[in-house]
Image: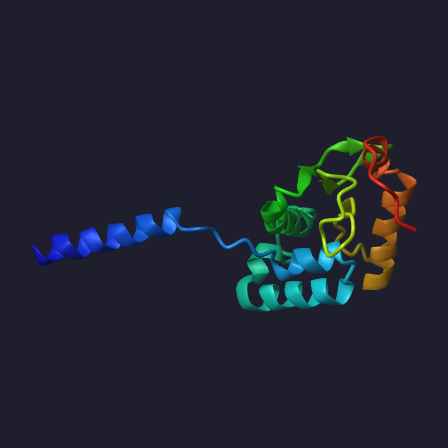
Amino acid sequence: ALTNREILFMFRKMILRWFSPAKNETNEFVKALINGDIEGMNVYMNEVALNTFSSFDSGKKTASKKAPENFFHGFVLGLMVDQIDNYIITSNRESGFGRYDIMLEPIDKNDAKYQGRVLPGIVIEFKVINPRKESTLEETVEAALKQIEEKNYDAELIKRGVKQEN
């Protein structure tokens, strides 16, 4: 009967956690992303990568050259889930003249509910350094930004009334 009682307490505790108020905190990566804090995003990703990822998850010795890009795409997409009340989150959709990786479209385009300002629309493009085209991380970042701009990935956001930031 002791075992049954322990199991009863375990289930009671588990069920109470299911129905307790969920913590409604945004993770540090998403906070940094919304605020345009590149250093904060980098600190978060480095901390998670060092403490969690294996080289088998994101390394070069994978079956596909796109595997590291796909891994980080899925990981970051998962981080965005807690913004489902604030954003329409889409992945690998067409916009402009191509297909972006992740787009966050603010649900309320006029309400200044995030630290006294309107939530920004966000387009994310993942890149893996291509040694034939780029020799530094900065060059890879520039290639991603150029791709977003040249292919007008923000066209859907603009069409739906998301204000452009300068």
